[in-house]
Image (cartoon, rainbow, N blue to C red; front, side, top):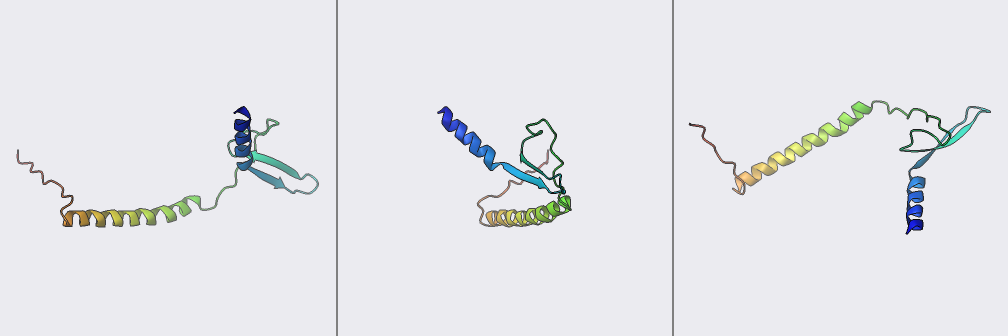
Length: 96
């Protein structure tokens, strides 16, 4: 059982690693980083991750249309349920 857990953890580690190579002339560096690593095996801090340009704009371009489409679907389905009297909200009179 222990060897199975060891093989699974090794497979998980190998799958979640990435190779970073910098070719800067004679001082080329090849390093392997894990996604959850905050330091390398030597104790060094890994370089900053690559910043995605227009990250917030891209996120808004994806999220806003899908929220709108979801809103339209739910609104139409609620109208369909009310039309067929499957679900009709109660009219509460607040005449106290």
